[in-house]
Image 1 (cartoon, rainbow, N blue to C red):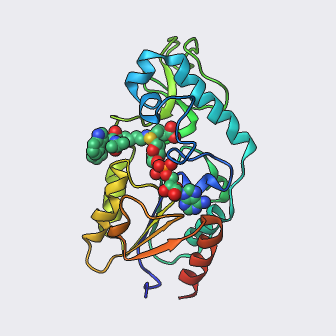
Image 2: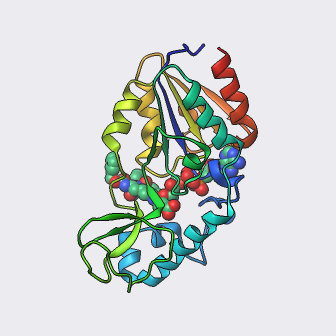
Length: 236
Ligand code: BJW
């Protein structure tokens, strides 16, 4: 059904990394120490209590040392390597499990935990240690401007032009492990669906806020279902 040289866009969300041990946002554990994610992950939350926000991201950055890519990450890296048509992987996740599995054509639209940015000079650094309000910028020397390189609510996601271009010429849009409640990512299916003939597949443990926009639903865990789907696509 999918042409061997079709253009594929994949969107992943927190469910992609759940089986690696990275918690999702909106499940039963969807709150963090009594705070809504919308309060912790926002410029207003950071201005109100920078140490709380630094602690939230420091813990998550440190936890990356304890997790590994799962079979779903590995399958997507294989699809990228072996697919003959265009391929783009867009992730909302801020972990680095896709690149550790071997993905290269990858956009982190909501930023990366292992990067930090200076709000004074905009310099972006690879970052594996903790951040706090006393961290000095290695580029401009200012103290107090360093923050996680993360897209918070109300901020503009990264590389939107490239993503929109890829969605508009997609023949297959695969949406994996996202609840479909955070925009603009939640609107990607609608954009892909506007292209005549584009086939839309959603993979999740359950139906979501955007399920009705998809042609096909694969209900099940990504570490089981994605290797099977990739095998089918590559065999076609
Ligand atoms: C499995 C599984 C397994 C589990 N196998 N599946 C009112 C209406 C519409 C929009 C707005 C509005 N008010 C404000 C807005 C805009 C706002 C927004 O969308 N708010 C909503 C909450 C309403 N959006 C923004 O502010 C964004 N910026 C923006 O819009 O700029 C303007 C703009 C306009 C137009 C174009 C471009 C720009 C910025 C959003 C930033 C989001 N940031 C966060 C936190 C930062 C990153 C971090 O700390 O990690 O990103 S929020 C959080 O949610 C995180 C995630 O990337 C994001 C999405 O969550 P995700 O991935 O879907 O996780 P969950 O937990 O919700 O779902 C997991 C799913 O996996 C579930 O469905 C499970 O079933 C499934 N699952 N295990 C398969 N093994």
